[in-house]
Image (cartoon, rainbow, N blue to C red; front, side, top):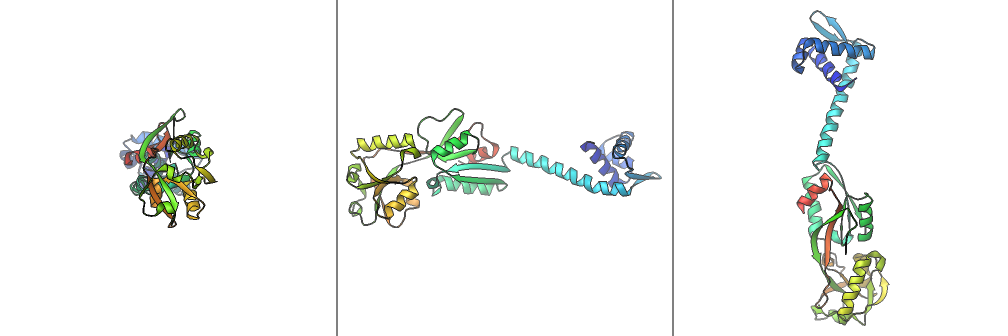
Length: 290
């Protein structure tokens, strides 16, 4: 049994006349009659009662008509869904992101616009650090990720720059360095208890940062590690120490934290969207928005 048999049967059932059904299908009537007989032979029952010049559904035919219509509708739905996924208008888009990348700016704006423009695409968002995201994209567990990737990407992965961020000094409110000073120098933080992240979180960036600190006269005295900017900001707010955090912290700064520019610290953070080529259709729609 093929889908054409179902289409022929439904047309004949609705027209109650093989001649009119054949016209509707752009098919010769003898060919339609033969296809209906083949279908009845395969099913082992008569689908029509032949009456004069017309036909009428048998009891078996009436039952079969309901199922045939459901199968044809499901087939049309499957075809439409496949087309929509192929155009990036349906399906699932799995994205990784650093929690701080979504605090403000381009990323949440693009995701909100994407949801409005493509409501049938399900967005699955996973918060993870840059190393974990890169591994998940390589393994096919994520379609793409917003991350700060320093150095070369693994083979097969590509990136598009989204924006460039910088580091700001994060100080507990009321700290002596925050009073009346809009800008600091890195060496001002040299004697302060320091909150920083573990090297395993982002090895390449960690090494770049420590080299930039040393050039600016800062060898941080780390007293506590935090795995993300949000954790480090919380530790600063609690008075554990000072830190240097991504400038996106201005969107989510705790009330107990003051942010200050560091004039002589030349260390940019480039936020990229990284994916494995070629991009999935839904991802291509997001790339267009970005």
